[in-house]
Length: 196
Ligand code: GLN
Figure 1: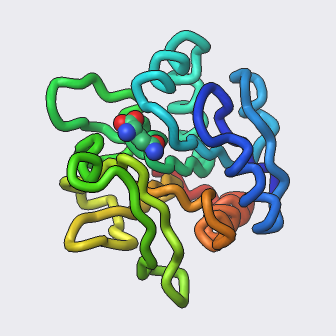
Figure 2: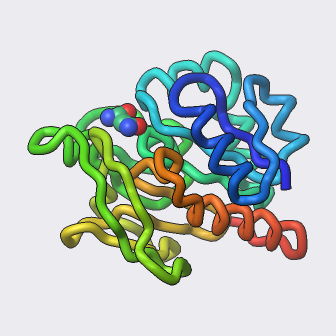
């Protein structure tokens, strides 16, 4: 499976490494034309305002919305999760508006800048190692969203059809099982149309 990583800002090389460890081919995506060549797209962590601004500048907002609406898998991690959300807490403008959820930015950031933990994630048999860095939280989800994991009662991993989102960075450890799960979503997409 060819898995693209949106390469405008953020942890791009780390995701490519995890994709390759999970058995996929990782491709840095810098132009909208490249979306035609990939079986799934990762939107990495970084700074969501910057990523959103660059996405608008290079035409990625409409292009990724169309890509996802065709049933192609999209995986947002940390800032990437913020970019996927339909609603952001506060008066900030949402970006892709693809996933039916309300997200609070920097929700863990004030008390603890960053931390690592082991998380139970639906679909992964033993706890996943997760790194949180000024991480967002999913405050509320719509009916189409399946919650895959919680940390201290807060939603930190979720799926809506072909869309996957994590509050944390799964690419900063050697535990690549969330990338494996995403590659499986891309393989399933090859067999049937899922849609969001
Ligand atoms: N705090 C960042 C934001 O709001 C996200 C942090 C991250 O991606 N590690 O965009």
